[in-house]
Length: 115
Length: 113
Image (tube, rainbow over all chains, first blue to last red; front, side, top):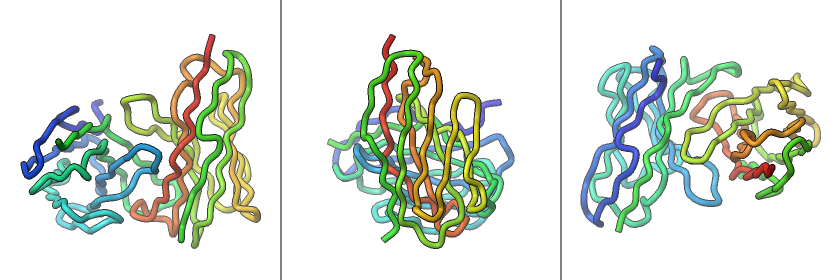
């Protein structure tokens, strides 16, 4: 059981380049999320998808776009990378968006450096 | 502004010793509080979840407490092991949904032999 799988694990981009981070989950979860984690700060929500076919902005959506390709896959796209987007990106999934007992499972992260 | 603050930022203890990590929050409306463990280079993994009515929850050697009146939580680790070396993140839900989670910056724990 793989859980949440992110690709790639590491990436170096030049300023202005574009790329897509891929995320897939095999737990039949309805909701999926993209976070970024910066040194000394807590994880911040970029975008989320409460269910297949829906996406919404989180706390820090500027410079990113997302696609909920199907129930399993949720991708994050950087159209024109900037040094401020250097971070570790985590994808997560959960049964549902709501629920005090709902558990979220995280991928292993993608470490992105923009030079 | 919703905030979650953790202390200390980092901690070094010897194997076999106990330790307690602190979390203070100003989050409204409060729904639940979670503690996660994050190993270096990995994603966070859930340790405990507590709702408003729960004031303690255990998961093996990990025991979390919650005081909703003072808006404080603690994570106590008993008989530490080398594998406990990780960051521990306190997360508060502002309203219940996963789109409403407020993450602390974490406490980095190092357990030395």
